[in-house]
Length: 348
Image 1: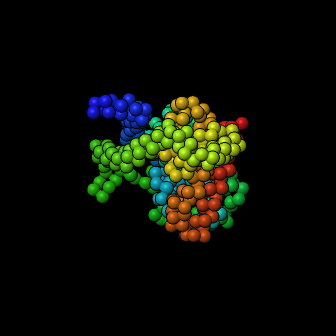
Image 2: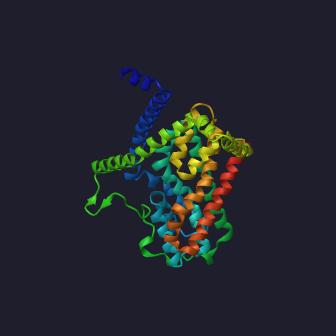
Image 3: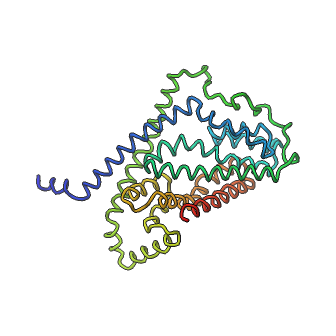
Protein backbone atom coordinates (compact mmCIF):
# COMPACT_ATOMS: atom_id res chain seq x y z
CA UNK A 1 0.00 0.00 0.00
CA UNK A 2 2.78 2.39 0.94
CA UNK A 3 4.64 1.58 -2.27
CA UNK A 4 1.48 2.33 -4.27
CA UNK A 5 1.14 5.72 -2.56
CA UNK A 6 4.82 6.41 -3.20
CA UNK A 7 4.42 5.53 -6.87
CA UNK A 8 1.45 7.87 -7.18
CA UNK A 9 3.29 10.73 -5.50
CA UNK A 10 6.32 10.30 -7.74
CA UNK A 11 4.32 9.90 -10.94
CA UNK A 12 4.92 12.76 -13.43
CA UNK A 13 1.19 13.56 -13.39
CA UNK A 14 1.37 14.22 -9.64
CA UNK A 15 4.14 16.76 -10.14
CA UNK A 16 2.18 18.33 -12.97
CA UNK A 17 -0.93 18.64 -10.81
CA UNK A 18 1.17 20.13 -8.01
CA UNK A 19 2.45 22.77 -10.42
CA UNK A 20 -1.11 23.45 -11.54
CA UNK A 21 -2.29 23.80 -7.95
CA UNK A 22 0.53 26.24 -7.17
CA UNK A 23 -0.30 28.32 -10.23
CA UNK A 24 -4.04 28.36 -9.48
CA UNK A 25 -3.41 29.44 -5.88
CA UNK A 26 -1.09 32.23 -7.02
CA UNK A 27 -3.56 33.42 -9.64
CA UNK A 28 -6.41 33.27 -7.12
CA UNK A 29 -4.55 35.51 -4.67
CA UNK A 30 -3.81 38.16 -7.29
CA UNK A 31 -7.23 37.75 -8.87
CA UNK A 32 -8.98 38.27 -5.53
CA UNK A 33 -6.91 41.35 -4.74
CA UNK A 34 -7.36 42.78 -8.22
CA UNK A 35 -11.12 42.20 -8.33
CA UNK A 36 -11.52 43.73 -4.87
CA UNK A 37 -9.56 46.84 -5.88
CA UNK A 38 -11.55 47.03 -9.11
CA UNK A 39 -14.84 46.88 -7.22
CA UNK A 40 -13.60 49.59 -4.86
CA UNK A 41 -12.70 51.76 -7.85
CA UNK A 42 -16.23 51.38 -9.21
CA UNK A 43 -17.86 51.93 -5.81
CA UNK A 44 -15.92 55.14 -5.14
CA UNK A 45 -16.49 56.58 -8.63
CA UNK A 46 -12.98 56.27 -10.09
CA UNK A 47 -14.37 54.84 -13.34
CA UNK A 48 -16.59 57.90 -13.80
CA UNK A 49 -13.67 60.27 -13.23
CA UNK A 50 -11.64 58.50 -15.93
CA UNK A 51 -14.50 58.84 -18.39
CA UNK A 52 -15.15 62.59 -18.06
CA UNK A 53 -12.84 63.27 -21.00
CA UNK A 54 -15.54 61.80 -23.27
CA UNK A 55 -17.46 65.08 -23.14
CA UNK A 56 -14.67 66.80 -24.99
CA UNK A 57 -14.82 64.35 -27.88
CA UNK A 58 -18.37 65.05 -28.98
CA UNK A 59 -17.62 68.57 -30.26
CA UNK A 60 -15.11 67.58 -32.98
CA UNK A 61 -17.50 64.79 -34.03
CA UNK A 62 -20.38 67.27 -34.50
CA UNK A 63 -22.46 65.54 -31.84
CA UNK A 64 -24.55 67.25 -29.12
CA UNK A 65 -22.85 67.75 -25.75
CA UNK A 66 -25.45 65.49 -24.13
CA UNK A 67 -24.05 62.51 -26.04
CA UNK A 68 -20.96 62.87 -23.81
CA UNK A 69 -23.13 61.86 -20.86
CA UNK A 70 -24.11 58.65 -22.67
CA UNK A 71 -20.47 57.91 -23.49
CA UNK A 72 -19.52 58.55 -19.86
CA UNK A 73 -22.26 56.22 -18.69
CA UNK A 74 -20.99 53.50 -21.03
CA UNK A 75 -17.78 53.33 -19.02
CA UNK A 76 -19.71 52.29 -15.92
CA UNK A 77 -22.58 50.46 -17.65
CA UNK A 78 -22.59 49.72 -21.42
CA UNK A 79 -26.25 48.75 -21.23
CA UNK A 80 -27.19 52.10 -19.69
CA UNK A 81 -25.01 54.04 -22.14
CA UNK A 82 -26.45 52.25 -25.15
CA UNK A 83 -29.93 52.77 -23.72
CA UNK A 84 -29.36 56.53 -23.58
CA UNK A 85 -28.18 56.57 -27.19
CA UNK A 86 -31.22 54.52 -28.19
CA UNK A 87 -33.44 57.14 -26.54
CA UNK A 88 -31.62 59.89 -28.42
CA UNK A 89 -32.18 58.05 -31.69
CA UNK A 90 -35.84 57.29 -31.03
CA UNK A 91 -36.56 60.89 -29.99
CA UNK A 92 -34.91 62.27 -33.11
CA UNK A 93 -31.88 63.82 -31.41
CA UNK A 94 -29.61 61.58 -33.52
CA UNK A 95 -30.32 60.08 -36.91
CA UNK A 96 -28.96 56.67 -37.87
CA UNK A 97 -25.65 58.02 -39.16
CA UNK A 98 -25.02 60.12 -36.05
CA UNK A 99 -25.98 57.18 -33.82
CA UNK A 100 -23.45 54.92 -35.55
CA UNK A 101 -20.78 57.58 -35.03
CA UNK A 102 -21.69 57.84 -31.34
CA UNK A 103 -21.62 54.06 -30.93
CA UNK A 104 -18.17 53.95 -32.56
CA UNK A 105 -16.86 56.67 -30.24
CA UNK A 106 -18.16 54.59 -27.33
CA UNK A 107 -15.63 51.84 -28.06
CA UNK A 108 -12.67 53.06 -26.01
CA UNK A 109 -14.85 53.97 -23.04
CA UNK A 110 -16.45 50.55 -23.03
CA UNK A 111 -12.92 49.13 -23.07
CA UNK A 112 -11.96 51.36 -20.11
CA UNK A 113 -14.55 49.58 -18.01
CA UNK A 114 -13.00 46.21 -18.79
CA UNK A 115 -9.55 47.43 -17.70
CA UNK A 116 -10.66 47.74 -14.08
CA UNK A 117 -13.15 44.87 -14.06
CA UNK A 118 -11.41 42.19 -16.16
CA UNK A 119 -8.05 42.95 -17.74
CA UNK A 120 -6.20 44.27 -14.69
CA UNK A 121 -7.63 41.98 -11.99
CA UNK A 122 -7.96 38.76 -14.01
CA UNK A 123 -6.13 38.64 -17.33
CA UNK A 124 -2.82 40.28 -16.37
CA UNK A 125 -2.30 38.01 -13.32
CA UNK A 126 -2.83 34.97 -15.56
CA UNK A 127 -0.53 36.13 -18.37
CA UNK A 128 2.11 37.81 -16.22
CA UNK A 129 2.97 41.50 -16.07
CA UNK A 130 5.01 41.81 -19.29
CA UNK A 131 2.73 39.94 -21.69
CA UNK A 132 -0.45 40.98 -19.90
CA UNK A 133 0.36 44.70 -20.01
CA UNK A 134 1.49 44.45 -23.65
CA UNK A 135 -1.74 42.69 -24.62
CA UNK A 136 -4.00 45.09 -22.73
CA UNK A 137 -2.09 48.08 -24.12
CA UNK A 138 -2.46 46.73 -27.66
CA UNK A 139 -6.17 46.14 -27.20
CA UNK A 140 -6.48 49.61 -25.68
CA UNK A 141 -4.75 51.19 -28.67
CA UNK A 142 -7.07 49.27 -31.00
CA UNK A 143 -10.09 50.54 -29.06
CA UNK A 144 -8.69 54.08 -29.10
CA UNK A 145 -8.10 53.85 -32.86
CA UNK A 146 -11.74 52.84 -33.35
CA UNK A 147 -12.90 55.77 -31.19
CA UNK A 148 -10.71 58.18 -33.16
CA UNK A 149 -12.14 56.70 -36.36
CA UNK A 150 -15.59 57.55 -35.05
CA UNK A 151 -14.55 61.12 -34.27
CA UNK A 152 -13.05 61.52 -37.73
CA UNK A 153 -16.20 60.06 -39.31
CA UNK A 154 -18.34 62.52 -37.35
CA UNK A 155 -16.18 65.45 -38.43
CA UNK A 156 -16.43 64.41 -42.09
CA UNK A 157 -19.93 62.99 -42.35
CA UNK A 158 -22.11 64.79 -39.80
CA UNK A 159 -23.63 68.25 -39.77
CA UNK A 160 -26.65 69.96 -38.23
CA UNK A 161 -29.03 67.89 -40.36
CA UNK A 162 -27.96 64.72 -38.52
CA UNK A 163 -28.64 65.97 -34.98
CA UNK A 164 -31.32 67.86 -33.09
CA UNK A 165 -29.93 68.94 -29.72
CA UNK A 166 -33.19 70.74 -28.92
CA UNK A 167 -34.94 67.39 -28.74
CA UNK A 168 -32.83 65.92 -25.92
CA UNK A 169 -35.12 64.10 -23.48
CA UNK A 170 -35.31 65.92 -20.17
CA UNK A 171 -34.27 62.88 -18.14
CA UNK A 172 -31.01 62.57 -20.11
CA UNK A 173 -29.73 66.12 -19.81
CA UNK A 174 -26.14 66.20 -18.67
CA UNK A 175 -25.69 66.89 -14.98
CA UNK A 176 -22.52 68.03 -13.20
CA UNK A 177 -21.59 64.42 -12.47
CA UNK A 178 -22.50 63.10 -15.92
CA UNK A 179 -26.05 62.15 -15.03
CA UNK A 180 -25.06 59.44 -12.57
CA UNK A 181 -24.84 59.26 -8.84
CA UNK A 182 -23.77 55.78 -7.79
CA UNK A 183 -23.54 56.77 -4.13
CA UNK A 184 -27.27 57.24 -3.60
CA UNK A 185 -29.72 54.48 -2.71
CA UNK A 186 -33.34 54.44 -1.74
CA UNK A 187 -32.25 54.75 1.89
CA UNK A 188 -29.83 57.61 1.30
CA UNK A 189 -26.09 57.89 0.52
CA UNK A 190 -23.96 54.81 1.02
CA UNK A 191 -21.37 54.96 3.77
CA UNK A 192 -17.74 54.17 3.10
CA UNK A 193 -18.06 50.96 5.11
CA UNK A 194 -21.09 49.92 3.05
CA UNK A 195 -19.17 50.46 -0.18
CA UNK A 196 -16.26 48.34 1.08
CA UNK A 197 -18.63 45.57 2.21
CA UNK A 198 -20.39 45.64 -1.16
CA UNK A 199 -17.05 45.50 -3.02
CA UNK A 200 -15.98 42.56 -0.83
CA UNK A 201 -19.23 40.70 -1.48
CA UNK A 202 -18.96 41.21 -5.23
CA UNK A 203 -15.34 40.04 -5.13
CA UNK A 204 -16.23 36.83 -3.30
CA UNK A 205 -19.06 36.15 -5.75
CA UNK A 206 -16.87 36.73 -8.82
CA UNK A 207 -13.94 34.65 -7.55
CA UNK A 208 -16.33 31.87 -6.52
CA UNK A 209 -17.74 31.89 -10.04
CA UNK A 210 -14.37 32.00 -11.85
CA UNK A 211 -12.18 29.76 -9.69
CA UNK A 212 -13.75 26.32 -10.36
CA UNK A 213 -13.76 26.90 -14.12
CA UNK A 214 -10.22 28.28 -14.00
CA UNK A 215 -8.91 25.29 -12.05
CA UNK A 216 -10.72 22.73 -14.21
CA UNK A 217 -9.53 24.28 -17.46
CA UNK A 218 -6.00 24.55 -16.15
CA UNK A 219 -5.89 20.87 -15.17
CA UNK A 220 -7.30 19.67 -18.49
CA UNK A 221 -5.09 21.92 -20.59
CA UNK A 222 -1.95 21.08 -18.64
CA UNK A 223 -2.59 17.35 -19.05
CA UNK A 224 -3.31 17.74 -22.77
CA UNK A 225 -0.12 19.73 -23.29
CA UNK A 226 1.98 17.31 -21.24
CA UNK A 227 0.69 14.25 -23.10
CA UNK A 228 0.11 15.85 -26.51
CA UNK A 229 2.61 13.57 -28.29
CA UNK A 230 0.98 10.44 -26.88
CA UNK A 231 -2.49 11.68 -27.81
CA UNK A 232 -1.46 12.51 -31.36
CA UNK A 233 0.17 9.10 -31.67
CA UNK A 234 -3.23 7.51 -31.02
CA UNK A 235 -4.49 9.06 -34.25
CA UNK A 236 -1.56 7.83 -36.33
CA UNK A 237 -1.57 9.49 -39.74
CA UNK A 238 -4.53 11.60 -38.63
CA UNK A 239 -2.44 13.13 -35.90
CA UNK A 240 0.31 13.92 -38.36
CA UNK A 241 -2.28 15.61 -40.60
CA UNK A 242 -3.45 17.77 -37.71
CA UNK A 243 0.09 18.83 -36.96
CA UNK A 244 0.71 19.57 -40.64
CA UNK A 245 -2.43 21.69 -40.93
CA UNK A 246 -1.51 23.60 -37.78
CA UNK A 247 1.97 24.24 -39.09
CA UNK A 248 0.59 25.54 -42.39
CA UNK A 249 -1.82 27.90 -40.65
CA UNK A 250 0.62 29.31 -38.15
CA UNK A 251 3.41 29.40 -40.71
CA UNK A 252 1.49 31.99 -42.72
CA UNK A 253 1.71 34.37 -39.76
CA UNK A 254 5.08 33.21 -38.50
CA UNK A 255 3.55 31.96 -35.24
CA UNK A 256 4.47 28.75 -33.38
CA UNK A 257 2.37 25.64 -34.09
CA UNK A 258 1.12 25.85 -30.48
CA UNK A 259 -0.85 28.94 -31.52
CA UNK A 260 -3.65 26.78 -32.95
CA UNK A 261 -5.00 25.39 -29.63
CA UNK A 262 -4.62 28.86 -28.11
CA UNK A 263 -6.73 30.42 -30.87
CA UNK A 264 -9.30 27.65 -30.44
CA UNK A 265 -9.47 28.33 -26.70
CA UNK A 266 -9.89 32.06 -27.28
CA UNK A 267 -12.81 31.30 -29.59
CA UNK A 268 -14.58 29.75 -26.61
CA UNK A 269 -13.52 32.10 -23.82
CA UNK A 270 -10.88 34.80 -23.34
CA UNK A 271 -9.93 33.60 -19.86
CA UNK A 272 -9.55 30.05 -21.14
CA UNK A 273 -7.28 31.26 -23.95
CA UNK A 274 -5.12 33.11 -21.44
CA UNK A 275 -4.91 30.02 -19.24
CA UNK A 276 -3.84 27.91 -22.22
CA UNK A 277 -1.09 30.24 -23.38
CA UNK A 278 0.33 31.24 -19.96
CA UNK A 279 2.53 28.14 -19.40
CA UNK A 280 3.66 28.28 -23.04
CA UNK A 281 4.93 31.80 -22.44
CA UNK A 282 6.83 30.69 -19.36
CA UNK A 283 8.54 27.78 -21.13
CA UNK A 284 9.62 29.97 -24.04
CA UNK A 285 7.27 28.59 -26.73
CA UNK A 286 5.95 32.12 -27.23
CA UNK A 287 7.76 35.42 -26.99
CA UNK A 288 5.82 38.41 -25.69
CA UNK A 289 5.12 39.64 -29.23
CA UNK A 290 4.07 36.28 -30.69
CA UNK A 291 1.91 35.62 -27.63
CA UNK A 292 0.08 38.92 -28.06
CA UNK A 293 -0.25 38.33 -31.81
CA UNK A 294 -1.71 34.87 -31.18
CA UNK A 295 -4.21 36.27 -28.70
CA UNK A 296 -5.23 38.97 -31.18
CA UNK A 297 -5.86 36.28 -33.81
CA UNK A 298 -7.89 34.44 -31.20
CA UNK A 299 -9.82 37.64 -30.60
CA UNK A 300 -10.73 37.89 -34.27
CA UNK A 301 -11.92 34.28 -34.30
CA UNK A 302 -13.88 34.82 -31.09
CA UNK A 303 -15.88 37.64 -32.70
CA UNK A 304 -17.85 35.04 -34.65
CA UNK A 305 -18.70 33.18 -31.45
CA UNK A 306 -19.35 36.24 -29.31
CA UNK A 307 -21.55 37.79 -32.01
CA UNK A 308 -23.99 34.91 -31.75
CA UNK A 309 -23.67 34.47 -27.99
CA UNK A 310 -23.78 38.12 -26.88
CA UNK A 311 -23.77 40.80 -29.58
CA UNK A 312 -26.88 39.78 -31.49
CA UNK A 313 -29.11 39.38 -28.40
CA UNK A 314 -27.78 42.61 -26.86
CA UNK A 315 -27.75 44.83 -29.94
CA UNK A 316 -31.05 43.54 -31.29
CA UNK A 317 -32.58 44.11 -27.87
CA UNK A 318 -31.34 47.71 -27.80
CA UNK A 319 -31.85 48.76 -31.42
CA UNK A 320 -34.05 46.19 -33.12
CA UNK A 321 -32.97 43.78 -35.85
CA UNK A 322 -32.34 46.19 -38.75
CA UNK A 323 -30.31 48.90 -37.01
CA UNK A 324 -28.78 46.39 -34.58
CA UNK A 325 -27.33 44.54 -37.58
CA UNK A 326 -25.73 47.78 -38.76
CA UNK A 327 -24.20 48.38 -35.32
CA UNK A 328 -22.79 44.84 -35.21
CA UNK A 329 -21.39 45.17 -38.73
CA UNK A 330 -19.67 48.49 -37.97
CA UNK A 331 -18.28 47.31 -34.61
CA UNK A 332 -17.00 44.00 -35.96
CA UNK A 333 -15.60 45.46 -39.18
CA UNK A 334 -13.63 48.18 -37.40
CA UNK A 335 -12.27 45.71 -34.83
CA UNK A 336 -11.05 43.33 -37.50
CA UNK A 337 -9.42 46.13 -39.52
CA UNK A 338 -7.57 47.67 -36.59
CA UNK A 339 -6.56 44.33 -35.05
CA UNK A 340 -5.20 43.25 -38.44
CA UNK A 341 -3.11 46.44 -38.56
CA UNK A 342 -1.89 45.74 -35.03
CA UNK A 343 -0.87 42.24 -36.14
CA UNK A 344 1.12 43.67 -39.03
CA UNK A 345 3.01 45.94 -36.63
CA UNK A 346 3.64 43.16 -34.09
CA UNK A 347 4.85 40.61 -36.63
CA UNK A 348 6.74 42.95 -38.97
